[in-house]
Amino acid sequence: MRVKNTGILSTMLIAGGLGSAPVAAGAQQDVTTGFSRAYQACIIYGETHNTIAIPQSECDARELRAQDARLNTAYKAVVARLSPARKADLRTDERNWILARDHKCAKLPDPDLTTECKINETIKRTAYLRRYK
Image 1: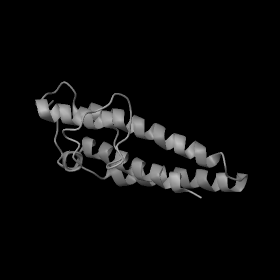
Image 2 (image 1 turned 30 degrees about the vertical axis):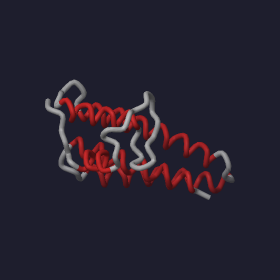
Image 3 (image 1 turned 135 degrees about the vertical axis):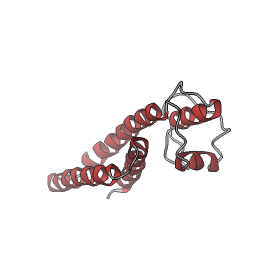
Image 4 (image 1 turned 180 degrees about the horizontal axis):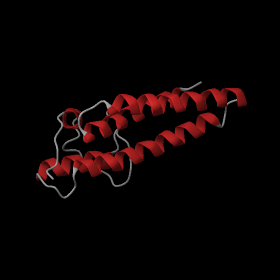
């Protein structure tokens, strides 16, 4: 399997000036794209070296797990300060969001694009929860 360059992600990473930036270990997050630096390094490494050592699908799977962890942290922070009624509302909203995200992303023709869609939607939802009042 060859590393896929979907264009969308590569353009976002490189346009943000991240293609040549040093990458720190761990799951630090870049504020310009919302993707973790580890993900950026994974994608850029595969494209730069034209290698299958790290298939895009593996980079995507790791990033989805990292973004899901960020989402869960943001969700728990919001829930901790809400009344019981608002907690129930948010829980329902979160479940509906998951269904909507999965439905939207499932329509894409390629599994890598589906996962990238889930990553993007999860990043947006995390930002929403961080602003939640």
